[in-house]
Image 1 (spheres, rainbow, N blue to C red):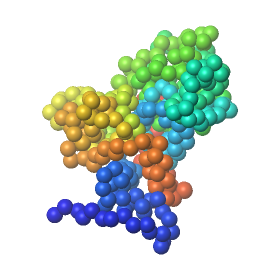
Image 2: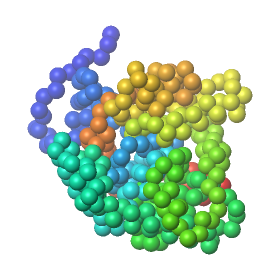
Image 3: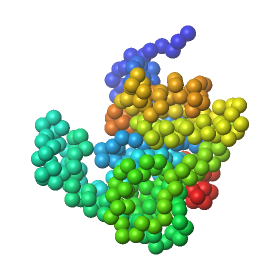
Image 4: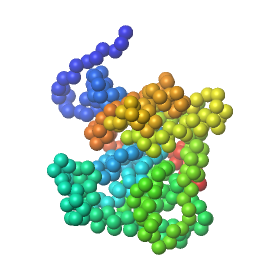
Length: 347
């Protein structure tokens, strides 16, 4: 018989706890149930020996979600990241002292914002001058790379690793890129020119090596082939969809082909948090428990959850639940096998 749907009650007898609430929500309904299921599956990924991949889309850095993402990386709850260009760089703004200010998106004059020198991200703005200076700051990395990288080309993954190293040395070490560098986590930015990095490249005095983003796919396939089932397996958490999600999923089809094409090599677990809808052909390649299975990207027997929710609501709740469940000192050790062969694996 099917599991019983349980009613949700206010329960403070044992003290308020987000992790216990998420556990109870798993037996509830609609997207509350999916939030509870996502929490359960993420815990299973953390407790298991497999590789945990993170796809990071949307405007999460400007929305202030970047400390949660770096927290996940530092604790080992994420082993490999595919990100948009903006999320890999715009967290530098606050670190460089450029605050984001809240505005009312329903009563704002965008022409007036332009005249006043502000760029808008829906309900928050940042100084245009500070944003432009931040892009020029990134130009300094291209100058540095031109001086230090002697080969004519560099893989995108190694490019991001070297950018993280440079940022760490510049004292802006709290963001996604620098954290991935310190923690030995591969960072893939498949559409890197679609963001502030391209303007940094334009303003750089020296252009340096050509970035070979096609080589990134070879790098990713070598990593995935080592981990995908029937090896220890891979799981994925998709914050949004788009290019980061498709980059991580399409590796499954290529690994399958590399191995002869007779047996699928899908991710064994997947969580996607999105507000997109499948009927418009969105979700960065369909729901993780439906169309993706037909491509061999996700397992029909896998723990796959589609959570239709705003990431800025769901991610803080899930992270606080994980922090309560595992405690402040917890660090996942399963990542060591991957970190041991970096950065050589990025070339």
